[in-house]
Length: 163
Image (tube, rainbow, N blue to C red):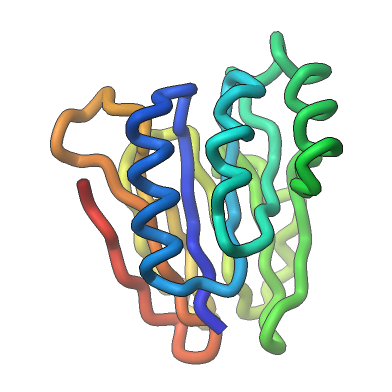
C-alpha cells in the first residue's frame, strides 16, 4: 500500500491544488496530513483527493479548530488531535504535528512515524526498524522546496514529489 504524506500547507491554496494533483497522479491509497492546515477552505481543496484523508491538528490550527472540525466532518475527512495511531498494511503508523509528540506513542516497536512542524524534510530509519518521516512543507515559505511524500508501507521506501 502506498500512502501520501503532506504537512504544513498553511492555507497556501495554489500549492494545495498542486499537491492534490500530484497525489492523485501517484495513485496513493490514502493520504495523511500532519497538521497546520490553518483554514477550512484548505480542506475543500484537499477533498478533491481520490484517496481518503486522515490528519491531525497542528499548532497553527488552534484558532480555526472548530471550523476545521466542522469542514472535516462535512467532507468525510478524519481529523483529530495527535497522536493519531493507525494500522495499515500490517504496519503501525503514528501521526503527530510536532515531532516531540511522537514520544507519547513510542514503545520501541518498528513503525512508521509521520510528523510536520519543522518545515524540514526528515527521513530517518531508527535502529529498531521502521521509519520517521516529514516531507517538509507545502506552504511556499521555502520557495522551490515544496514537497509531498509517497511512502510504500510494505518496503518503507519514500518517494518525494517536489514542486
